[in-house]
Image (cartoon, rainbow, N blue to C red; front, side):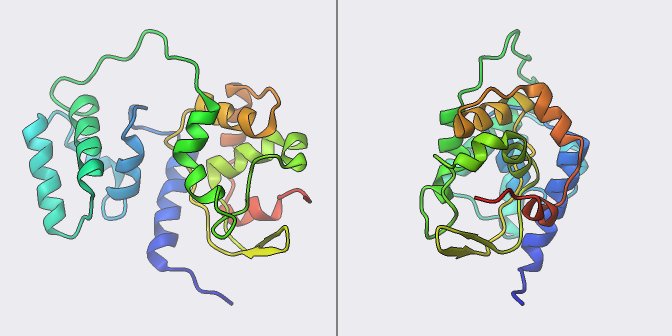
Length: 209
């Protein structure tokens, strides 16, 4: 039996807990970097407790964490610092009066395509008839991730997929609509989010191709 990296499993546990509780971070570009990089060593409450730092203050925090081993590219560091300073800084950005409609194709390209456009890394998601019949399951995969062996188109896949709890219900609905070509609402996503599934259970619920 394949043994998964304990760090990956721990990170999945943190992300699932956050998904079940609802995302407490302001939804804005860069939030995913907080989940991916900061919660490996800290509870999210530790990050939120530093709310109110100015940009130099957050930059100093990142520099200190880099000294402890945090690895960020220049682009990732800039995006993360922009998010922390704007959303958790001394002058948080005001909430938008009316959020723009989520673009499912753009969200898919940003969060999914890197793996799922390469059949050597992950199962292709586009143009799958089964997904059109089960949009609720597609939402479950996005919300809760998936772990365990999969077989599709004669290939075996065993790498876990991490959940994406930082996406809003409207954003998840847009991805589902893009993949299934069927209407799917944010309210439907909220119902799926409330189920609090585990990645292994999501795999067991997977419909036949």
